[in-house]
Amino acid sequence: MKVHNCLAIDEAAFIESHLLEEFWASVIPSVSSGLSSKILMVSTPNGVGNKFYEIYTEAEKKANGWVAERVDWWDVPGRDEAWKKTMISALGSEEKFHQEFGNSFLDNNVSVIGAALIEKLKREKKPPVWTSEGGEYTVFAFPDPTHHYVIGVDVGEGIGRAASVAQVLDITDLQNIEQVAVYSSSIIEPYHFANKLNVIGNSWGVAPMLIERNNCGAQVIDALYHKHQYEKLISYSKISESEKYNKTRNIGVLSHTNIRFDGVQNLRYWVNHLQAVRINDSGTISELETFVRHPNGIFRKKTDVFFDDRVMSLTWALFILEPEICQQYFEITEFDLQHKPLKIASNGFWETVSSTYNLRDVGPTEHIIQKPGPAFSSLNISNDELADLDKYELDMESLESMGYSMYLPDV
Image (cartoon, rainbow, N blue to C red):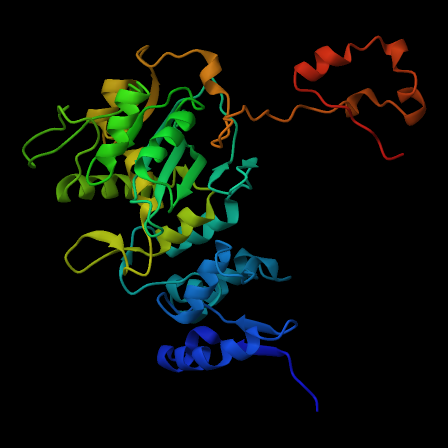
């Protein structure tokens, strides 16, 4: 008897959800029982909230055993910007083009940023330069003592649902802000999360932190301040529209409807309007896709199936660029036409020693992660010459201590 061990499902996103769910429940036990069985699921996107979207987005995070593959329109030979313009004209709108060719999961609700920008962020994101052993801490650039950093934090309960997230942004050049590191864990308890934040903060020049104080955030803030003596914790609340941001007795960001609304609008200004923020983390980009405005005007995750922890921590990181806050911690040397900071400089308050710009692991040892140094390729030493390095009088120990490593040519 001939046995088939490969199941292919085409245009899976367009199968009615209840039909696919029933089919899924019946076929998965059979397929999973075979050691060589495979399922291939192929589709163009069809909004969010369906089975295809659920499986694909989880596969992007390597959370469900599936492997995510995608072919974008610019990967196909013969398709360029001229072709794109022709197709937009034929389809009638750029939104329809992004739905059909852009690999964008469009939503009927208003997303916090546009589909075209989501496409751009995915195309331009950088690979990590280092990732922790457990995968919870991802770094996209090494700390630079000449740069300004800020950390935004959203705190979860640590029970496997909402994650505790820290977003590290390089805000040295406000026209080219970059996400340089992300920490995310759904199982870390708030008190232990404070320990991780202390390590992370002291890796990025003791960067100022904006932490939402509500719920579990208070426990994290108190541990940072009292146990670790981490002083760069920004404190703000906004009681009414007529009041400005004021420092409060309670350290941290005391968030409620007004301040959260201001924070999201500020995020939209920098990310969507100015397109001044480079986001390298795939998880953050995925959350931005499903962070939408609801009928009551509030921006939040589309449904409870999704998460918005990375978006909210990004929101708090960018909140330092609100002029009322920014001018207390940096010198604003120039404003843009909307009276937002255009250029900032140190005001001397945050001066730190260079040793606080060493990237450290968040594991038990908290050891320093060395930045890879340049190799010796410029010396053009052959294999024969490598056997007689003494004639070059190279002090190998000194060079290695400076971060250099030996280059061994293949030929």
